[in-house]
Image (cartoon, rainbow, N blue to C red):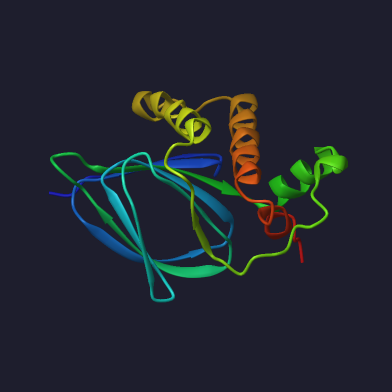
Length: 171
C-alpha cells in the first residue's frame, strides 16, 4: 500500500513521503532546491543520470524537463524537502541584496541540474530545521518561511558564482 503525503506551505516548501517507488516526468516552472531526507531520487536529465541519497541536495534550474524516480530504501520511505523560488521571490531578493555583492563575471549556465557537495552543513541544517513542522503538520509563520527561503537562496549563491546569472535572469 502506498502512502503519499504532501505538505505545502504557501508554495514555499514541500515535503513528501512515498512508501513505494514512484516515477514521474517533471518540468520545473521555478528554480528548485531539493534535499533528500531518506530514500533515493534518480534524476534523468537529457540522458544524464544523477542519483541523490540521504543528505544530498541539488539545484534544478527552471524550465527544464526531467524524469524523476523516487525510491524508498531499507524500510524507510522516500522523504524529501523542496524549496521553490518564484520569480517574484527572486526579484525581491535581488532588489534587497547589496549590489556590490553581485559578481561581475557571472555567466548564465545551461546546466539544468547541479548536485551540491554532500558535506554542506548549511544545507543540512536548513532543511532538517524544516522537518519538525512537517512532522507536526504545522505551517510555519510567513516570517519564518521568508527567513528559510533567504537562507536557501544564500546557500545556492555560495555554491557557484554562475548561479547568480541564472537565478536573476528575469526575461
